[in-house]
Image (cartoon, rainbow, N blue to C red; front, side, top):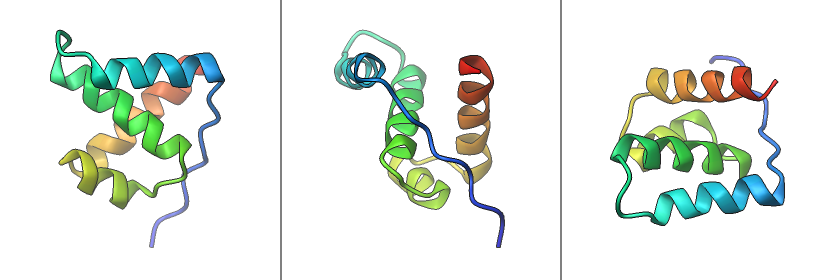
Length: 73
């Protein structure tokens, strides 16, 4: 199997913002999916679990997480 991806640590403010994004009705579905992916990873879900929950493939989930990590660092 592949290596484990590192976890994501969110501040309370970041988590609140992402949770608001997942409940918003006027933003693009892609933005909602990205927020869900980040929240699920921060909660300790595996790439496979996240992919199943958001209906995307592993590669797309990993790409989203990598973009998030590169943007935060």
